[in-house]
Length: 116
Image (cartoon, rainbow, N blue to C red; front, top):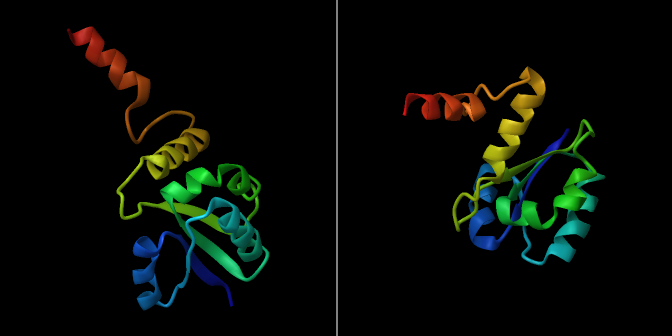
């Protein structure tokens, strides 16, 4: 059976343990990179990671982007949303559909400029 992990600073991840998820309180990007490689090679289907850690490990995360498992998903930490998760969703939708149907993209910006 596959498992779910959550990685990030302690304050951001400790609550996920109450949901039965495996939590890893890691602030150091080097140690987090090693832990990510370990988890990705195990029985983890989903690895949630705080956006700050996700950004720090972008090169390591990119190695798993095309792999079917694990899905590595950024989540906001206690410091708040940095926009990385939203940007990834936008990019995925643009690749799948061929245009930005979620956030309006350039088409709304050009319409706004024409109305002025």
